[in-house]
Image (cartoon, rainbow, N blue to C red; front, side):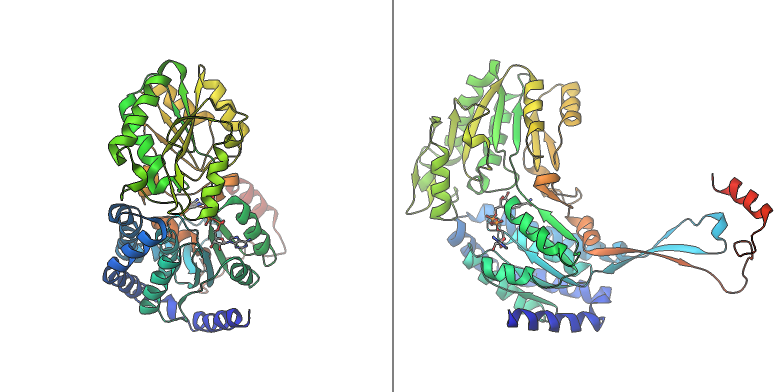
Length: 457
Ligand code: NAD
């Protein structure tokens, strides 16, 4: 606790020195960060392999490459984003001018999860630095190799007065949350999200919560089943199902369910052979506790495909479940692993009612060729984000703000939105002193009131 206090005091003083206000200073550090990540790419590959069994392809495409893309976007656009914006001024405020300025909040705390341990720690950090804040970053304790690599990269790039990594588990996280921050950015479970929000409330600290939930994927009968099967299996098995945007469960129209199930089984084998648990492209589960939780979810279900696991080497094979009903335990909690329960439907309204009866998901996915049905699905369901004939991909477009709603989170980020969420929009009106129209001052005149009645319409 004492050390945390010291760190925060030092950062406070540094922020108060106004060093981070200079846009060129921020760009210089973002560029330095980009170079440092490049220099440590092999270490990151090794760390992500050790922590989660990620292949180089997954490590680059979903973690390192995404961070590089976000850095490029900020480096290229920061000057434009940071420029004060002139807005119209009403005639009764003549001769003033009005502008919106962006100011950093100050001290930012970022707490990140284990599943994309590099990308989900660094992406918010880029926004926080780009907006001119000082930052304490706490990575997940469950991916220690990646956390160590992050700490090394950050130490090389930033003075600790500017950005520092604090390692640790729940206790450290709670210590940090007990301090006073100007903004907290949390990515993790809805359960811990509530703890973060409660802690932040003590100081009225604004919070961004990027949480999880159950993302439905719905396949209607009028779709290209082969493409649907391929995309769903890809999105579900990315990072062995440990991603917040993974399709959690699947509703398929009863007329095409047999065909889709068969195609999905074929896709699993095409992607990872018949022995995915020994395939180096298929990641592992983070720890034994998570494997234990996943095995429990198999109780009282029909395993259509897979269902094998090895607690020792932390592998859990791609698994498809049938015979699941809406009341099954697996339909109650976020699965966060390579298990896909499949339910069938005849009428899409039943599915929409089911989705809307639960907490608002982070993402919903709908497969259909029918434009009217696509529009209706989007209109009648509620979620952080959505995709039509696609899964997961919306996360990768940094021109689309990403975030949840309700139990899946509050606030969004990526690209320009990241700069915006880490800075306060300060409205400023400026008036000349060369002359001073007397109309607003007492004693009030009747004719001015009449004029106001015309102007305030
Ligand atoms: P988690 O909530 O268990 O942990 C996240 C962070 O919170 C870790 O750094 C951890 O040390 C800290 N923490 C844990 N318990 C705490 C407590 N009691 N008090 C204070 N801090 C605590 O999440 P996880 O298991 O690492 O990640 C999986 C969850 O994150 C899933 O629910 C997933 O959907 C969600 N997630 C969401 C997004 C998103 O962008 N919306 C992205 C990735 C993961």
